[in-house]
Structures are given as C-alpha cells and as structure tokens.
Length: 116
Image (cartoon, rainbow, N blue to C red; front, top):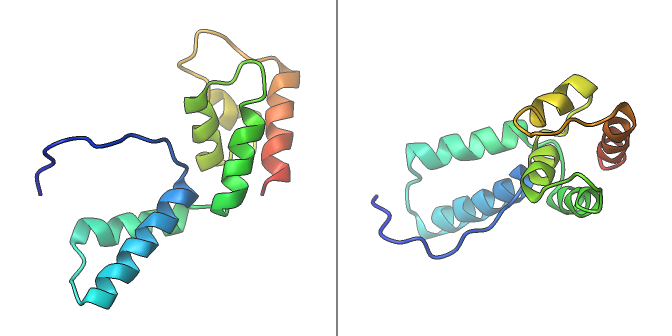
C-alpha cells in the first residue's frame, strides 16, 4: 500500500495505539477482510508492550507536561515506556542538552508509579 498524502499528524501513546488497532481489527473481522501480516504484528507488539490503559497514559502525559523541563515528545515517550528506575529515565533524556537533578528524576518516577 502506498501512502499518497499525509492527512493529519498526532502524538499518541502505545495504549492509545493499541486501542485504535483493536478497533481496526474488529472492523476487519466484521467485514470478513483478512488482516495483513503487518497489522497482526503491530497488534501483537502493542498488546505485549502496553503497560497501561489509554486513560491513565493520557492523564500521565498531562501531569508530565506540567513539569518545568518537559517536552511533549519526552512526555509521550515516558508514558509509553513507563520507566521504573533513574537509569531508564536518563536513557530517555540522553539526547537532550540538559540533565535532570535527582529530585526531578524522582518526581517523574513518582508520577509514573502513581499512574501504573
């Protein structure tokens, strides 16, 4: 399938993606259309790695965006990965030009643990 044009672009977390893919799967099953290999693998991947519900992940993103050194890309990445240690969190921030203090890392980890 060739993509001819980009209609819209929106950031979503992995639980949101899982929800969308499951709706597509149900629609195709109801219509009797066979799912492609890529779609089956995408659903499997999202199901295995999704650690939260879409509502909780959206709530976590909104809480993270209230923090001082938080960019939307990083907030969505944190809500998708759900890091549980400082090292995992530092890996997410590795490409940034600034580093976080221990207190800032702990604040983010506390937010993640409350939304699990």
